[in-house]
Length: 490
Ligand code: C2O
Ligand code: CU
Ligand code: CU
Image (cartoon, rainbow, N blue to C red; front, side):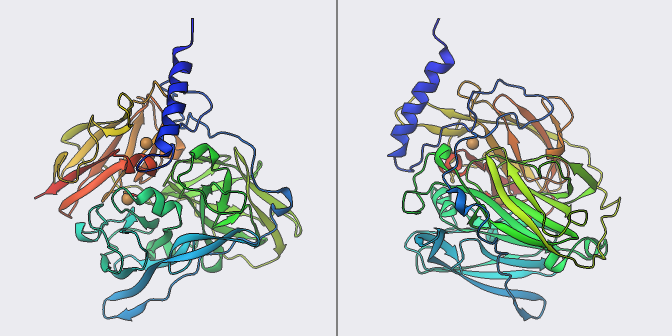
């Protein structure tokens, strides 16, 4: 008897080919896994592994370039607010030496400049779009008024500017800003419209964690490069075999023999990173929305698209001259080279920050993500419908606490998704009825959901009113419609 799944998979591949030439580009439907995952992978939600394919980088380039730390912007300080101006402009990146390629940038940098904000001190950023395509900036993980959220329809036309107000009324966290223009987010982010936005608060500062030059954001993503080192797009996700750390292919990063804090972000459009240090400990201290209650020693951390993990790595036990490689299941990502000694007054306290008690939920909702492949063009759906900016899918009352049952219904084709909610951080209650995995810990705004899985999350809608989206953060999926919106009402 022919394997029905296999037949469907062949059909899917064909569809993928058709899609590649379609309006939005990209063979968006291909799952990351070699094999369609059965539903219910149990405790560990990240049941679908990325393809461990051959890497396109030449061996001699591995670890030969240094990983840059994205430039940190200095604000203009006005009374009560930090001001920034960031042009959105065409630029060039060089992923292969001697082969520059066109990219889209914040302020000319493939990994945009970092903004460091402080809890309680607002930030105002004016973005000017110097590209010839529309743009729109979203602060991922930010608790911000609707007018500054980067709602997909609030686009910045070429030549126009828009000012975003970020109140920073949330605790310290590793956030990121990225493009969110309706239907264009996937290609804009792929071409480089992504950067870090880090919030710090006093309580966190007083913990004595590694800081200053020892607090380093690392943006991980993938890319498909052609023979000339140019970014390919539309691009088949499985062909995105080049891994970039802060925009550089498999770089090295010189470190002192002491503790560092690394803020890991998966900024890939659609990929899971399963990160390990070849046996050495990754001490996780934070997730999407800030600090965990206590540090957790991890041998592997799995990050779905748009998820973050803050980790401390202690290089003090490693002799000068030694190397530690950060691996994904697809191969090496980055090599830490221990090059010098340095004093280390930093600590990792046994208690970081307790999570607040969850108020009782009064509303429950179901969210199902699924592709409709019955027509000529694939349609990406949330609760059976593609995104319509003129439709409000849920009305949510300000001040209430809700439980959302978020489901990935793409069992037949084994397509993984990540779920992201704007405006509020949530907590994962359970995964397929079982306790959440360590990758779900803490305050979250994005979670990976394997085919067939259901994740229950609890969220309190605190203050801001208006329309905010929730969507799959596989950006080719959201660009195809796997997005919906709620309106928070008084
Ligand atoms: Cu990072 Cu609506 O996205
Ligand atoms: Cu977001
Ligand atoms: Cu998806």
